[in-house]
Length: 394
Image 1: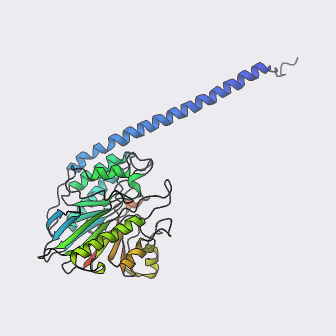
Image 2 (image 1 turned 180 degrees about the vertical axis):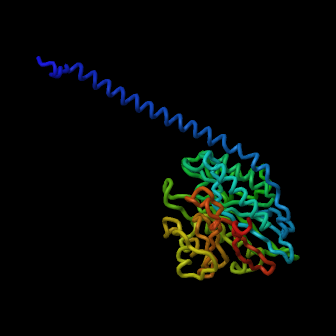
Image 3 (image 1 turned 45 degrees about the horizontal axis):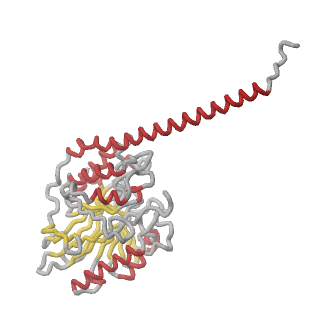
């Protein structure tokens, strides 16, 4: 036999090679599964532990001197609604910020500190009576945020407390992602904790869709403490899919809104249309897109598509409020580079300026879209809206 001739393998030898190959494949699969579990374990530990490292940064901030200068008094009425009494001759100032996106992750420590600094400087410049955050306080994302969303929310709340100003939030889509550790209900309970004395958030009626549907009434300091404006905070919810297709304000929330205003109108011996209300939520209604094309632009520009609810047939909040007649303005976030206000069918549709340093690519390199929206509620029951750009106060 030629030395170069291959030696034929027996069926037994072929079987052994097949078995060895299968074992190697199985070993690789087991190793991959082990590494995935190990990686998830490490991610869990980092997500759980990292937020506690922000305490020294937060401790460095002091309360805003001179804030809440137009607040004479505040109280919670028998129906659980927060009421502010506005000083005569002074504007009650609402500072609206949105899309803070605190990551509380190994990748976002620098950006998170910049976000806190921006909020503090804005509040120091504006000196508001109330701060409303229209969603996405945190960023519970695997790539640029902590999955330990509950801890991240505690970091955010602890920072907001340092301002010494009443504050509340409407939830966005990133507060309760399916891969995050805390539910929307848990987030609400965190914010309702007695630990956060300045937080005036309430989870709202249990029978309603969403968490954080809330009523705040601004009253005049006259003999009857008449209603000036009603702030209606609504949960625009998150997704209709698992992590896709943005949701909307549901019909039971709309009916609740109407019932609240109708009740106040009866108590005030006024009509619904005489009770001015301002609506705050995260995901913009579909009409934000139409308003930019067909309405009157007051300020700002459209720099990205309007990410409105996926099911536009179910998105009836604007049309219902337009017919109802109480709503004077709506304030939303969600689209970080849209910063316009447009008047459409008698209602002001306003994009609040974002704080975001991490969610949008390269947004940390510019202050063009960063800032706060300022609502000045006046003594004659009117209001004005303006923008405070962060770049202008640095």
